[in-house]
Length: 104
Image 1 (cartoon, rainbow, N blue to C red):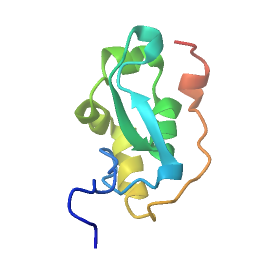
Image 2 (image 1 turned 90 degrees about the vertical axis):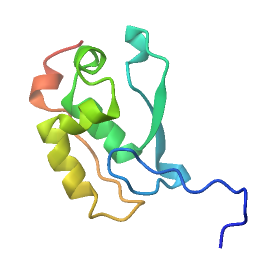
Image 3 (image 1 turned 180 degrees about the horizontal axis):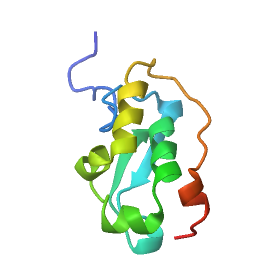
Image 4 (image 1 turned 45 degrees about the vertical axis):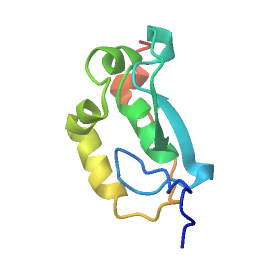
């Protein structure tokens, strides 16, 4: 049982699983290179998937909120899949060929 006043586990706003401290990444909703400051804690695997699918320009212009990220079809499919995994699950992520060809 968690003592009163103790914060609960940090939950990933994408996959809604608890994030173990070793798997916790701070994601800038608008990339720092585009002037962003606000962050959300995400699972490392979720964070890497975002950057594998989307460029920094796309993140800044179209996907600067958790709701907007969840509306992306490929990210929706990833989230549905990763929700079935244990909280400490991690797998290598590869950038999509579309994102690999663009710098920003």
